[in-house]
Length: 173
Image (cartoon, rainbow, N blue to C red; front, side, top):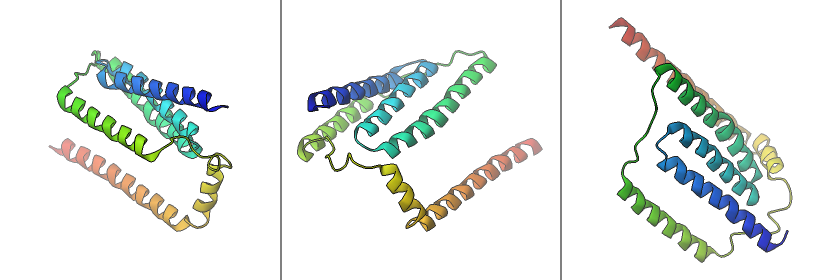
């Protein structure tokens, strides 16, 4: 592909991501916001693929789109059905949010213009990042990987214990 085609594809995915993210923020209907979040997360994954970060793109799709977003949609839809309510949100804090948006855009533009070209180099586009991550994780970084999994397991058990502990005390009173 030539440079013009790559630029058009990049800006198309960037526009889809930004427009759907704005719809997530400004929509008053929670279900519409959740569906717009789907397009935002897919757009971010596409940008990761475009920038040769295929492992992060797949992780984005599996964890966020495949797990969290589906859980969010089912939770909102079932809550709406059980409670017979129309779930709406209000857009609040428009002025601080707008100021923060302008500052973030200014920071991104400053970074964009001071770092040079945003396209990855040809050396980055060759080879599989996933294979290198897998080899490094299962060889050199095996101990930190296992330690992180144990810490996450302990955090999960602690959260389950705290949730159950509160339920048990509420039932006693």
